[in-house]
Image 1 (cartoon, rainbow, N blue to C red):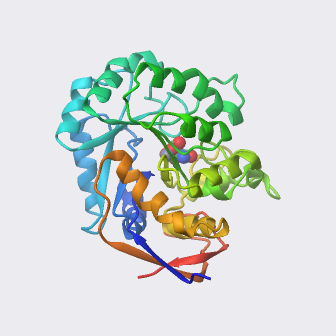
Image 2: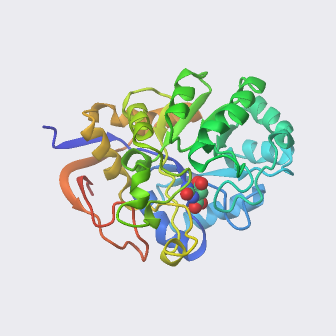
Length: 339
Ligand code: NCD
Ligand code: ZN
């Protein structure tokens, strides 16, 4: 039995680092494991200008080790100016822009109300090779929440890819068999990120013995058959699937509330969580591709040069990390990040 694995240092292709005191509390956990991270722009107010992104990047760098590189994203709104996107991209501030359908998730109120409003932005992004990151859920209240990702594929994503056949698109945090199949069968310019929690949890986790706010995120966990499809995609070796934690911390009081926020704080033990899955699936040899190679290749960025080591060892996840409840709180994982 393999007792240690050393892989190229991974990157996190989807993370929420927040701002202010929360940023200072959570960013070091990401920087400890990952060389780079795609930082989501859903602050309040959202990161819609090049200047705001530069300033946010500076604040992140003040809280992290020198070796960590935050990769910034633009928050698309109905009013986004394609020239501003192109300027931020050419000045190497923005590597991607994020599409939040308005109202789909946390701090998405300023998001896009109708995909036709951002057609000029998508045309420009396609031309300059700027990646589109997509929160893939419809916001139609008439659609069952567990179906919103699958319906998004039909209503929005498939037409979008037909209209912009060269646009690089990352279908973020996929949770369904439909999304996995769509990405697998899709063109090479379509890829997807997978979170650790969607590999571990199905929707029963939300109701295990009572209402479990710390298992609640968006897209919400689905039925077991979907979790298994997402697992197969992660460990299957396809270059279209890569690591994106979607670590999304909220204060405990905002989670444990009559109207609890969506988001799971998985940053502290993300690699251990993923490694446990790859081990369970007998696919440790494919962990490096998923965690360290596929994302960099898709984004057209160099693969990292240094390595990290994980040891097979019991890791007891604490109930509290920096005043927050981490993913796997109170559980024991089978792997531990060395150093
Ligand atoms: C994210 C957040 O809190 O910012 N929440 C979540 O459940 N994932 C937003 C998002 O990525 O949907
Ligand atoms: Zn997210």
